[in-house]
Image (tube, rainbow, N blue to C red; front, top):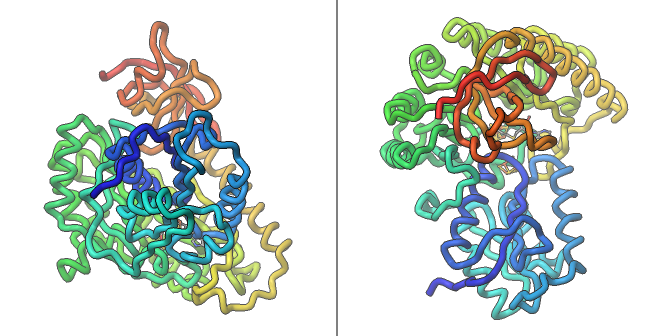
Amino acid sequence: MAPTFQGLAFHTVTFGCQMNKHDSERMAGMLEALGAHPVGSIEDADIVVFVTCCVREAADTRLYGQVASLKNLPLRPGTPLQKRLVAVGGCIGQRDRERLCEQLPHVDAVFGTHNIGSLPQLLARAIAQGPGQVEVLEASEAFACDLPTDREHSWAAWLPIAIGCDNFCSYCIVPYVRGREKSRMLEDIVAEAEGYVAAGVREITLLGQNVNSYGRDLYGQPRFDELLDAVDATGIERLRFATSHPKDLTDGVISRFATLRSLMPALHLPVQSGSDRILQAMNRCYTAEHYRGLVRKLREARPDIALSTDVIVGFPGETEEDFEATYRLIDEVGYNQVFTFIYSRREGTPAAKLDDPTPPEVIQERFERLVDLVQRRSFELNQPYVGRTLPVLIEGASKRDSAVLAGKDPYNNTVHAPVPDGGDAEALAGTVVDVAVDQARTWYLSGEVAAAHG
Ligand code: SAH
Ligand code: SF4
Ligand code: F3S
């Protein structure tokens, strides 16, 4: 029998990538279906669910610190429970299992990436039997797509098309905590997309660790280009996807940037390094030249495409020469956005066995040099948007100023504009407004609302 959480307040704390954000929407959907209601803070919650990430050490440390600090937090006034329930799921749950409860005995439930549907049962068991309920599966039997979802925004949806990853980049923990790549049936994905369109969703983001290999496990060959055509045909207004692996980005997919009405002119294409020696040590299976070729083809297909990427600085054995190759590539390609990371050793990955003689301060200096370049180039690349009028999908008020609207243009740029007279930022959320851009900064564009599309 399904447990009931009638009258209980819950709060989710989500770290990591969009997969986790999506999983956490499903967990919220499940708890709400069982009678619990979401609240905005841990203090006001009877149940706290951490959806965790372990891709870099900083995410680990933060999670352990934050969960430890809950131990002495007073209970919510009026709570029917004897103890605030703390659940830890996601990638750290998958990796650490019982160890988590050994270190943090006040944790009530631990679950992994393959069994988010077990959360309610684990919480019910913790209420009846006490903390330390652990259930982690080695692999998923099926896609958890029949679970209810409480989407963060009614106008936007994450749509997982594949889970797991088969690439085993030598630095990366994801294949170990998310398992092997498993694609979802094409018809099921399209049916879900049709449902979203009928419900008024304006933007769909297809999700996978490597969307370009979508379908290989199911159909013997990738069918991502076909999937893009089919989702475009549902009539969705804006279509995006993440993440792309350069080794699997085909001419077919590239050509869709020229032909598909809904496919937004923005692509996240992680490069990681500009040095062939390091790319090989990372097991990325492409060269810097191949990557440059992809960029050329993408710009031929869609000259205004906005590119973003991920870079790791300080991979074991990276020399000044390797770093300079990365620096040159980043400078040359010209990205609207670059996510820069310092290499973080992850136990259990092949790269964790490599020694690195490079002193941390040398890596830090390279990192700062790269960040300076990224900021300068982002600022420069944003200038040509000044003078253009762009359709912006409004997300609500900007974080710092409730009188300013914030949203995304087709290029995935953040755009700010003062709320028009008589308007209300929250009421405009989910609508598309034309913004005449008059200023471009490093992180965002700003301008005036020219027209609303409703
Ligand atoms: N599947 C996606 C996302 C992987 S995690 C992809 O392949 O792009 C997101 C980013 O984190 C990676 O692109 C990489 O730049 C970074 N990352 C992963 N493992 C890391 C590590 N051990 N140290 C530093 N950065 C890492
Ligand atoms: Fe990690 Fe590489 Fe898979 Fe991305 S493609 S999740 S970096 S192993
Ligand atoms: Fe982190 Fe897991 Fe995503 S380790 S990046 S939350 S797949």
